[in-house]
Image (cartoon, rainbow, N blue to C red; front, side, top):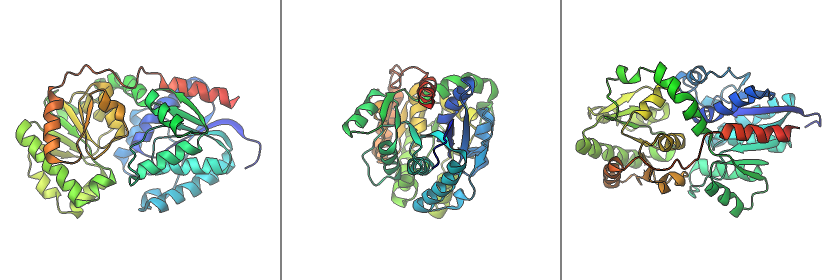
Length: 371
């Protein structure tokens, strides 16, 4: 990499969660007049999981979008191809800092490209651990943390993890940018969205479910256990569950021959993925959420909506300690028991991620190190 680096930040996104988490940072970079450009890896490939979010979040379309990434089916193949294409862009554009977020293959690939080219690397959402080494996201987040120069931790707990691992980069407790996204967009979403009317839902009389992690949907035993639990919950609670189905999950339901069985449960409403505003309103008005999405776990805790994590772990342990979240272990009996307990719980827990402002704090740190 030539020495003539520009005083510019490269922001990398590739999936719906990373776009939501980076949106507030992008807006703050614009407000502060910090030069930046945006790379979209194209890891998500449907309109509702991609372009609709640029529209809703009022972010300009990325100048640079990678090609063919959604056709890469294996983790190694996808990581290698994103790395190859991002490296070519960075060689031409020469930004001083690359900012990645979270634990996706896109973020890992971008981080590796920056490290190999001796660019400064910043990681938003550092210090999260599930300690489940068989989970792909755990590999990604650990590697990114250990090669980053600037680590933006969402909590003191995350900072402590990084200190215990003797991370070489500089650690800053900034809070989570999801908090900024919810704060900035909820009122706008309420004004614009008519999702409750469209789905004939009444506030606080339905639940929301999302499911897409490979350890949950790629194995027949796991996905069957989850839906056995869902059947027990609907039989006992008698409230509808709105289920926007991720493309990966829909494929797996068809592959395992489960879609028809699930549709027989009239209280489970399978719908197409939603835009950000519609989904935010849907969650904010729900009685509870069930999910394996780290972003939704955060959003639920911030909105004081009880959450049942689908799976055997969560890296967002702060939400469990706050009383906002329980981990189901994909055990149908536990799913029902935890759901009943969560629905009885007072929604008075303290937001485990503190006050909004993470995006402003992150941009201030980036500005200092651009100079």
